Length: 429
Image (cartoon, rainbow, N blue to C red):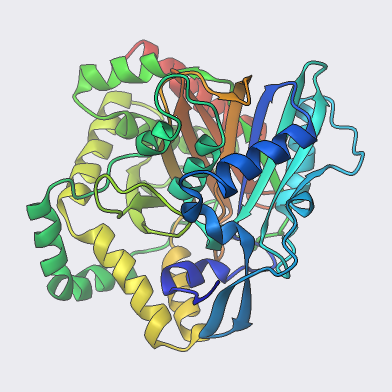
């Protein structure tokens, strides 16, 4: 296998010393050993009926500049990618948290396919922790969460049913809407690009300062998704509207507690799936990092949710996601790599954080018969964005993971606490 790296994947090969384009995740299951995991991965991912979706996991990137290729690793060996943690004593969540922060600050071996799963077989006495790291060029969040769920048991449907329920619906869910959005691209692209260029960058202690390159990770406790659903029903919003409004409130609370006045709004970069409806994700990047304004403020939660809903509805009805996706592809395809990277980074640097929300199966999951106790992931950032928020819901729970540069968010526990306070406020909405 040897094929040209498409521009929508090449954009995520632009790692920097302070921001690595690596998606990190933790899966905690009942006791599972290394050899069983390797055998399960081989059987379900590389030998299963949909193995073609994951063929890129056997490939490395060769070449440079505009001549980069996916090339099958002639020495591919699964035992090099599913490994132990080299004897590091990771006994509890605090150990894992510190270790994953260190790992997120270091890159992957790019001479091989850029992914790995580190297995902590004896974690908290009766559990196993899988520390997953996959370079963003291999695939986006939709593709990689689909990969994880394809590895797992599906007692609630056919073997590959989970992949179809992953993630939010694409922006355009009707053929006429897709046609009109596509037809509008040449006419709307210049205006959308000019408006993004004119946006004033966020300025706060969470954004603007130089990055250190030292990452730290944290996560909330599992939260009851039914609370979010009741809140969205009362207001007439969506689950995503409610969660995004909660993120904005948590940012505002954190800044207020650290002596920094909250701005009028936060700019975030929100990945939006642009796959056609019903398409099962394969290993590739098929999304648009859409800039979105979130209202700041620590009060009027209902008003904040409605304000987010207004912004989200406008985005869904517009051609913005498709235009942003095509603009980035065009920049990578037709401009020198250094110039295109500079323009993309210039636009990205206006945002405080990358915030993504993935919807998984509503049922409990298992991996080779072992119950999946928790699943958390962390989205990478580019340019000088130093905060990433990842929201994943499955089995009636929602959990938020935060990754942040130590120079911008030295008190990550306080940001987690601020989000949990926002969640509790939903109960009394």
